[in-house]
Length: 225
Image 1 (cartoon, rainbow, N blue to C red):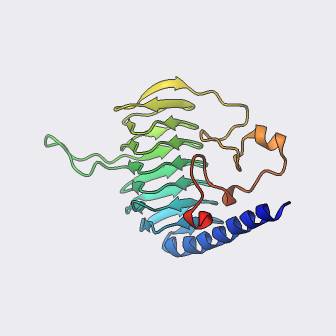
Image 2 (cartoon, rainbow, N blue to C red):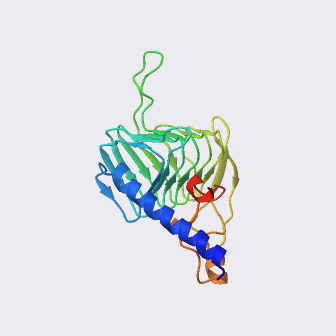
Image 3 (spheres, rainbow, N blue to C red):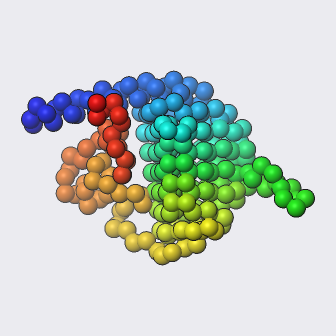
């Protein structure tokens, strides 16, 4: 292994431990936090009934990421929430394992105000394992999204979505069914730590997921300086 590669890996490892320290601080009021939580930037995390699983990652940058509310919120393992996303629960929000929320995604289980004299809506939201929610998409109250779904950027999801689907538009509609190789766990795929069975078979020593950025994302600024 050449010296340059060692230097880069050392910087990744050092950055990860700094981000873990930030995770302990910014998630200190969370009811339960799994192993190796990572925080980059300064999100606001003040949900009062929140539990997160292992390898939780939240980034906050150009816009503050907000995870808030007094409702029940459960977030699974290996979940990534990107900059500027808003997740607010007043009733119940459940996010499964291996889910990614891109920049400025909005997830809420209440519409806050009624229209035409009707009461406001409160209904649980569920996002299934392995789903990828694109930038600035909105998940509205009462929606259940299946497993390994891709929600296109800017989509407004107003109704349930079946497993292995690509949805887009306002309101979001199924564009097509997605086909995955056997054993594939998540919609978002990369060649750096993805649990894709093809990659594991090709290289038994797959790089550690927590040391490398999610699909399509640049390394933290502190690593490129």
